[in-house]
Length: 240
Ligand SMILES: [Zn+2]
Image (cartoon, rainbow, N blue to C red; front, side):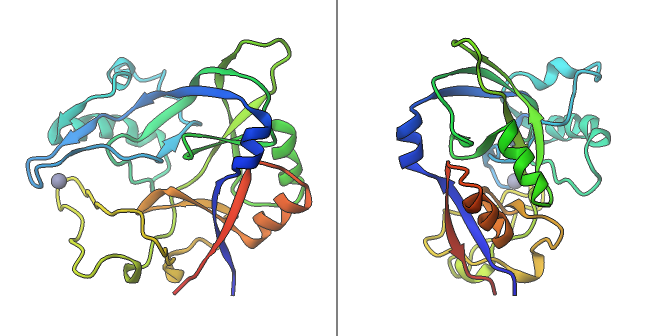
């Protein structure tokens, strides 16, 4: 049976490097103001830095973060659909394109932005690729560094796949909204992974119904620790 680990930032490594990083992705779907459930919301963690919207005549409509009524959100989503793989869910707030922003200071092998985006030095990613790890897609960033000779930081595009098991959600938790698919859930204290939904072809992924949780396989954890790539902590999660 495979083992899976929840990734988080390593505060000791962060304190040692002491960098500053601030940025956001170039394009995004708007949030939604839903007429069915009454919520105004956008998701976090559905990021596709490899997807380039610059060829869309309407690309300016994807720049400003804002909520839109569901029909307008759905119109914009259909414009993007041909540019992403067919199984991608594209919730409100999904982002596209490179991370644009500012950075300064020293960086370790692996760093986080907002505990959600994973950034990796090119050398570190190449070493993990050489270990045969699957599903690590490094994407260029457009970060502006203050110092000379900055590191080359790539953002990992981490596919949302697999789900949390209903057993770790509060009893009677409402199903997703039939219109906007909003599924509101607080971070569970004891997350459990739904074994039947977990990918077998990836060593790194986000949970599809909880995309701020980044999950690595045992192979991923072992390779990171063996290569002494700093920046991550690992917490094993049970599967059911
Ligand atoms: Zn709704």
